[in-house]
Amino acid sequence: MKKILVIGKNKEIANVIIRLLDAHEGYTGLASTSIQEMHTSLMKDQYDLLLIGAGFDKKDEEEIRRKAIEIQPAIKVFEHYGGGSGLLLSELKAAFGDE
Image 1: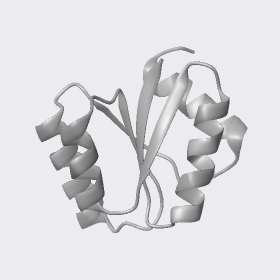
Image 2: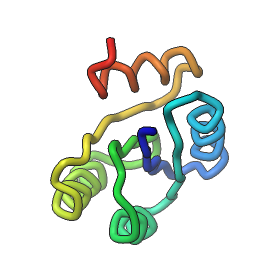
Image 3: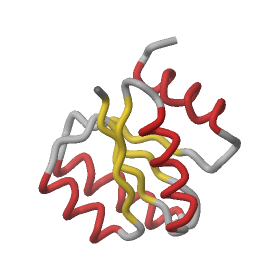
Image 4: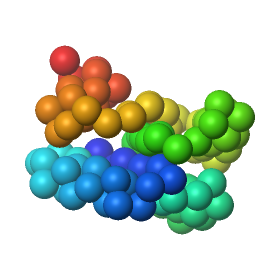
């Protein structure tokens, strides 16, 4: 089971991504809507992937990446800005090298 932490400014979209992940065998997810929430989640539990969603500027994205890797050096960081469940699953397979 791959554990994925989703960070995105839009809570509703982040929750949709979590529903898609949880509906797919092999993935489970948790959503956060701020860098602080992400930080707290990464300190509490181990994740395989951090999925960055829309709403953050480049500076914030750099901070997100830096903090995530600082806390969990082995975590993969991937961006997903929408496009439907098929695209999301394809991106996850690519991120995990399952293609």
